[in-house]
Length: 266
Image (tube, rainbow, N blue to C red; front, side):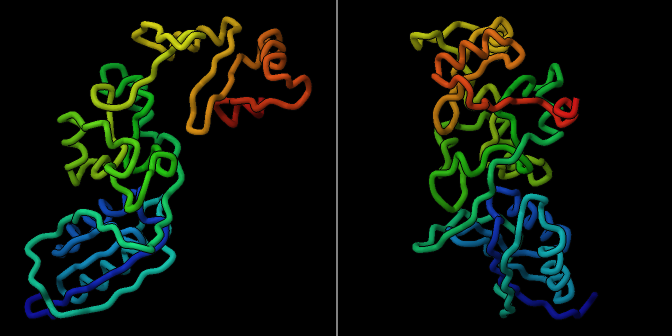
């Protein structure tokens, strides 16, 4: 509306607001309300400065509270109003490290429906790529080395994104916009299989070979974040007995991995 008062809002948000697509959410919201300014991760919060019509700023702040990404959680939101600076556009600023500040980080998130669709679609560039993720899913807490949450401060830092992944990361309309673990088979981590002596076994599909070995009664050591998981086919009694002998665990229950709740009920 012509002549409507313009203001600058400064907003500080604390909670689980890093690693959950919060900055892309703020960016898109600012575009929707035609605001200018910036959003930035710090070691203790997400900070926002936004300029625009008073009514749009008020609606923007309300939407920050009510339309947050599904994995986000706001514990505290502080907003104050100040004279205009004159921002020309809305941008995502480089994160800032702040001494003695602490930021909650999201736990790892199970692979979302969209990513699963890519993994299981022949011809998709992420077909059968096990580390597929986006802003709605994938590793978070287990890859972080320091805060604020940015790729350079995670174990993904050595993996330079290929042009396709970088394009997704830079596109505000893409669900991988600022997805820190974004990767594909060309540029990201890979899976490999070794023999009992640690010698890598040549294979174009190590997961398929591992599956075949499990089905044939073998025991596999699967490297995880906290060590190795020893795995066998739970329906193969001899394989389970063999695993118990190796672990010297004759009677204590073993964990069983089942694909779906429906299969458990069966």
